[in-house]
Picture 1 (cartoon, rainbow, N blue to C red):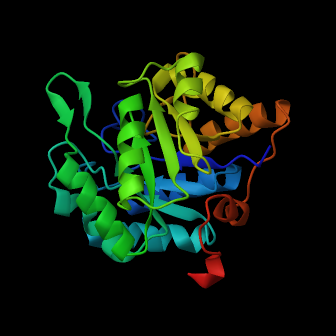
Picture 2 (picture 1 turned 90 degrees about the vertical axis):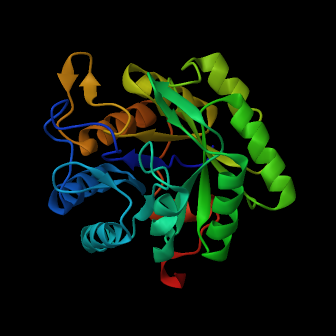
Picture 3 (picture 1 turned 60 degrees about the vertical axis):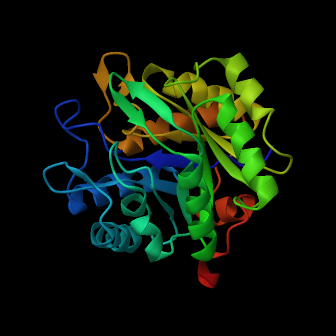
Length: 275
């Protein structure tokens, strides 16, 4: 079984300091959380950025400031900006960060209900534009999947060349798709041959899904974006603490942790010195 790639989704766009005081907003706080996750074993930093008051933004300048600052303390980490942004942002606003030519960025392959009146819209036109622009800018997409139908849509886009192969998927379990082992096994078994995948369990589902992903040969995402607790009723002190728990589980199950260089090889990314 190949080594385990750990992604740390360090802040997201929705969680707040009121929910957990360690949620990062400022550049300094984002760097602190990225380094804690990297030092604990994360190869990929999945990055949203905020204004200092916590307001989510897709500002290219803010992303550049955060990426440059993270790079100083995590020199070989794979920094993966989100193009999801926050509910209500325009397509071009969400894509602005790809002008920085990151190695990877997210590409959501369908719309999703986040609860109440919040609907995260990704039309066919949006997905096609994102795929085309990301290819033009040399950015490998991580295809974000919230239900099985999004895998099927992605297959169509792959066939058309809108999304390139080998494709990397991220299964977000516990929002629209139930966070169960049978559901994970079913969706993981539906991706195109040669693809890689990561599982992200939301809330209480984070560590059960991480454990299942480790056993199934997939990869794992943890972090404050998806879950604020290290165990029931106990807030996590850092993203690094969440990563450390995954590392412990992986070691108990006999799965080695990938370094950033090994993660690049698994994901068919250029070596760091080639970027």
